[in-house]
Length: 286
Image 1 (cartoon, rainbow, N blue to C red):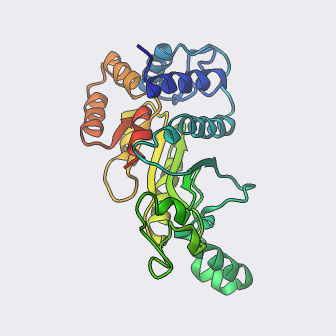
Image 2: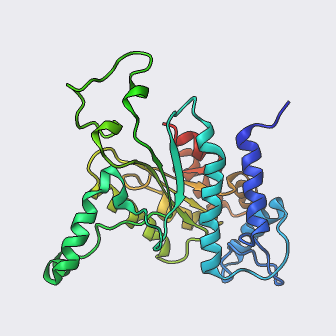
């Protein structure tokens, strides 16, 4: 029997994290996603690393690890989500955004007005000072879909003609921009307030949209359940948090004998606030 697509993609994803130096263990036995000042963090992260067979070498620079983590999450989604056409048909694009990328949040139908606001504030210092730039959001990875031609919409039944649906976003003939389907924030670790950037990005997407809200998720490699809870608990901003190795995390927390951490982890999982990376492609088909 052939291995399931998502099972194979998960293994490839973990192998890529190892091969690209994102998940490493240094000479002192400290994994790259662990907090070196926390014995529990090291113990749990080491359990995950041992399960995934991390090689021992020096930890990559944090910024480099973060950028590679974003790239590998994009690759995992590229390997999986477009193949779920039976559940979510469409012409999909999965890209990593960055400061040098010509595609920005305002490149999509729900947020095209942000470019106009940006032009206004650039030209008016007083307006910029009063408004700030909180409305500008920059997700790490996005999934968007192309608009659909009438020939596809009208097959096999004629659905639209020139008299109706003149402003529907998905209709190519209306001349709109591509539709943002999902925003994926990638946080290899969750130190201090840095991870709260994901919540800020999420709130920006929610408050500033015109039209359908895209999926808003966070993918992380953080080993400490307490830190995961700081972002995952509660509803209203992110859809859900996805752990790069949830099954291995569960085993590692159990092995560490940290009852409080295990209880918190169970709260997150039972409350559907924390899932495994392999759940993400299927959840994005909804």
